[in-house]
Amino acid sequence: MASIRVRQARDEDRAALAALHEREWGGPIVVVHDTRYDLRDLPALVAVDETGGFAGALAYRVDADGLEVVSLAAAAPGNGAGTALLAAAQETATAAGADRIWLVTTNDNLGALRFYQRRGLRIVAVDAGAVDRARAVKPTIPEVGADGIPLHDELRLARRLTVADRR
Image 1 (cartoon, rainbow, N blue to C red):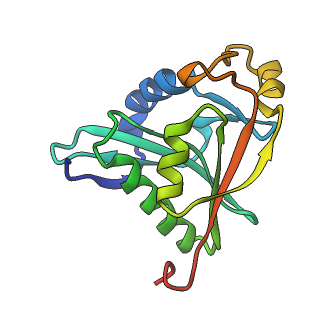
Image 2 (cartoon, rainbow, N blue to C red):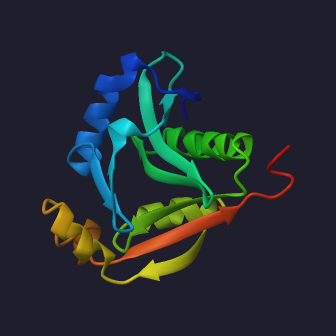
């Protein structure tokens, strides 16, 4: 596994972020929990490898509900970027005074469910039909997702930050 360092995104990261968002989401627009986000408008953390190469990114927002991970993607799976980005998001949440991190994924995204649960997030809600509603806003969302699973629902995962997390 490569040595990964995480920092706030900079202007020079725009092209790499745009390419990652195009690959992962079909562009910078994501629709989640009935909200349309333009990832270009959100703060982002960027993971870089030991050569300074782009390894992944996490777009987020912070409000009274905590730090929401709106988008998390690694340039290549298994390089440690996702783990490093999620840990940095937790630090960002703590610095902002948030007491939890949370996110939404889709019912077909079994790899993400495995990844997040192994890092302490738990499923706290299921919104049946949320992806069907999102398709009305972003028609390019496919009907069938990973592993041939019909894509219909959102799963919300969250992790409360403990006192130990805040040290």
